[in-house]
Image 1: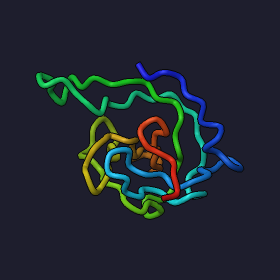
Image 2 (image 1 turned 90 degrees about the vertical axis):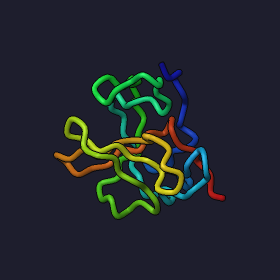
Image 3 (image 1 turned 45 degrees about the vertical axis):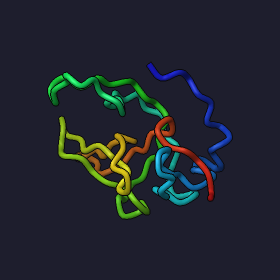
Length: 122
């Protein structure tokens, strides 16, 4: 279970204050002021799964803090998984670690989890 985090310092006028980067390889995923803050509780698969897990039994955790990106072309660098239950999961396009969020196929909106990325300009 993810512990509650305070992301208020990352938000300016309802948007991401600084660049959003991969926590593993520092690749730039989203430029500052491109994502809108959104709170919605969603189960997202854990980044590290147990070895004996199958696609039908992925371990997940509830996340609630996301950067909403309405157009996938807004991203600087993001990858998409295969479709699972009407969603594609977002991964770093450089190191392929993730998921760092999800893409809702019905709305075509992307949700980047604040808990799964780092916020820094350099």
